[in-house]
Image (cartoon, rainbow, N blue to C red):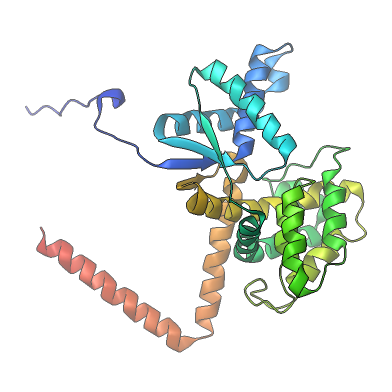
Length: 311
């Protein structure tokens, strides 16, 4: 009777993880809140959410597997202070030192370039989310579960709307104006606003289905109450953030972006939308579709032939 080979424990296996991971700042602060909930006063069931528990497990996994953990250091200074306090507390609880490293571009101009790229890559997703809000504002929590409304009294939603609605300088002065906004970073979402305002009405990359994307976003926040903006602003920021962080990780952190549970659904939605968009484009261009199908078929045949010859 043959016996199965004995499996080596994970700690003794030959797995070697080398890459760096960029994690969402919310993962760090949420995990710190979790430790505060289980060590501070009050009943646990009243203070710990499933999301906090998921964020903790994600953080522990990345600490165990990544060569280095980095985070987005372009957030407002008050968020940096909160992150540093959370890092100190996490290091005391977990036992590791120097857990995280902040990364940011060398200048506001470089950050603006990332903002522009992030908005262009997110435009289709943001259009979809804007349509969801317009169709059923009261059902946002159910249809877009990644969104958590900003706290009552938080000045950022109104500041976001005011900055997005304000007149912008002519195109030859706009980049300097937006770079200054990024440098000051006076409210949560300033980078998202800068990316939107950098879009020209006739920019086809920013408006893949036609129309003025910047105007669409401005119309969304115009005349809205503070309560509505508490939902609209995080909806726009979440749609923009994943692409911004993905590019920041690759270009400035020598890392891959590891989405936490809070925005993983956003990235899944974007993948589905991209597939739908590409399928729609191909369906209207039979020649390109046939060429693509032929190229894929040939590549698949070469791949299967090489596998067969190696057996």
